Length: 495
Image (cartoon, rainbow, N blue to C red):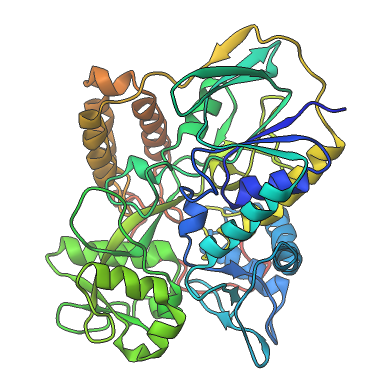
C-alpha cells in the first residue's frame, strides 16, 4: 500500500485533491471544519465555464489572457478552460446544486468576461455551497482521514526531498509524521494586508514554509485587489461585494453621482479588476468617495444576492435604497510556489495547488471566477496523478524546516499598514524601499516569518520596474495614464 498523501488545507483545492486521490489514503489537515475558515467558503463569485450559447473555451481563454496582461502560460490556460464544463459536472456529481432557470444554468457575467459564463450556487454563496458539498463527500470517503483543528508547522527533509512533517493540534502539542508526498493547499496571503477580503487564516504561511524549504517561487509581485470591498471601519477582513452585482447592472458612482468608469475602459464597470481598483483608489486619494449603486436591481437584489443584502444590512446600509461605500482590498495572490502543470514544486515530494501555487494560468491579474475553477480542475488533476504515482518513502527526516518566529500583534498591525501603502493597486519605488527599510529596522518583524515573506514580496515588486497587470508602478516612465489593455486583442494575438 502506498504511503498516505498529506493535504494541507480544506478549501476547494485541497478537497478536490483529497477526493480525487482515491484509493490512496489521504490525511487532510485543516485549521477548521468543514473548511469554513477558507477563502473558498467566502467566495461569492461563481465558476467560469463556457456553457452558454455562442460561447466556447477559446473565448474564455482569450478573456483570461487579456485580464492576465498576456503574462499567462497559454498552454495551461487552454487546458483550464477546456476542463471547465467537466469541472462543473464533477461538482454536480459531488452534490453541488447550481442555480438554473428555464433554459439551463443561470449564467452571470463578471469583470473581464465578454460573455455571460459564470455558474452560481445559491446566488452569491457559491463558495460556501461548493465547500459544504465537497466537505460532506470527504467526511464520507473511506480513504480520507480528516485531521481538523491541526496546523502544519514544519517540513522534514532528507537528501533534498520531503520525508516528513510536523503538525500542531488544538492544544499546541506537536505531532511528527512520516510523509513522501505533501500537497500545500493553504490559500493566499491577503491577511498580511490591513484592507483585505481574505480571512485571517489566509496569511501566507504555506508559501513561507515552502520558500524556507528552498522551493522556487514565481510572480510574487502580482497581488490582485478587489475594487468593491465594503468600506467600513474596523479591524479585520472587509466584506466583499461580488463582481456579479456589476454584472447584473449595478454601477460605480463618485460622490456627485457620476459614473466612475465612464470613458475609462471599453468594458466600463466590468473592466478587469486591476483597472477598476486603480481607478477607485485614485479617486479616493484625490479626496473623493466611491459608491456601488445596486438600487437599479430592485427586488432582484434580494433574490440573487442574499449574501450582499445581509452583509450591508449588518452594517446599517440598505442597498435597496442607498448606495454602498466601497474601496479596494487585497483579494488574490497570482504568485506563489512555482509548480508545473501537475502541481509539482521544485522540491521533490512537495506539491501545491490553488492560491498558494503559481502555475502561470492567471498571469499578472486573475480573471474573475477562474479561482474556484482552478482549484477544482488542477486539484482533481493532481489528486488523480498522485494516486497513480506515489513517491517512494525517503526515510527518516534528517532536517526540519520551519518558517520561523511569529510576529507580535503590534508588529503585524505595522506590517499590514506598510503593505497597504507600498504594495497596493498603485505602487512606486520610493514607497517600496521605505517599507523594506522599515521592516529591516524592526527586529520583531525582520525575524518573523511574516516579515521575511513580506520582504520577498517587496523585493519582487521593486525588481519589476515596469507595470504589468496588477503590478502598477506609478513611477514607471512608460505609464502615461492608468488605462491598460484598452484594445481587446483577438485570441492568439497576445504576445
